[in-house]
Amino acid sequence: GEAGFDLRKGIDNIPGELPGLDPALLLPELPTGNERGPAKTVVVGGGPAGLFAAIVLARRGWKNIEVWERLREPPSADDTTQWGDPSRSYNLGLGGRGQTSLASMGAWKAVSARCARVAGRFDFAPGALEGKITEAVGRNYPTMVIQRDRLAAVLLEELRTKHADAVKIEYTIECLGFR
Image 1: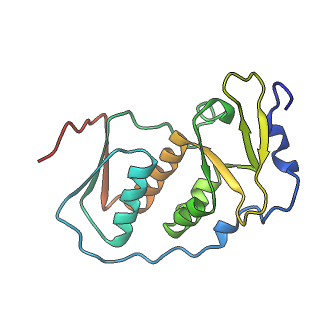
Image 2 (image 1 turned 135 degrees about the horizontal axis):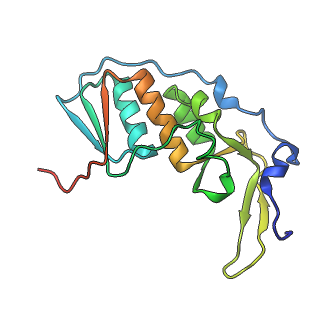
Image 3 (image 1 turned 90 degrees about the horizontal axis):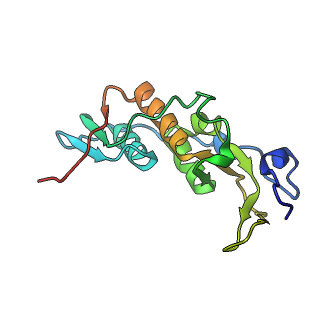
């Protein structure tokens, strides 16, 4: 590997056979349900997993869902001053299973619009100053990456847009226990 190699420069020139740019966009969204949940549900944690859980419950028909998050609300998913340099943040890779799950809940279109496509990873051996590129080939879905907090911001937008009647999200609330 070349020192200082910038993976972002090669995104559109990835070698090998690649699937269509975003096959998950073609997947159908699962129907919503009318399941009656408990009188009140609390999801502790407003990161990607907690917000996705709230979307799943709201789509099942549950009401009165609260999401409690200890940290502040993430910035808007489209705030370019916050999300400008993906190489300097905590990125999550979304493969076929992640894309399919998000598509089935109706969130993949919004998420994929804020992702970058990658075809491998840049690995550093312990103590190494230079990295090595490991290509991913033979997959049905391209791996897409997004900053963790940006994914949370997109899922927050999805909740507020599609499930505001069922879900309330509270920030700077810390859960110290339960009974």
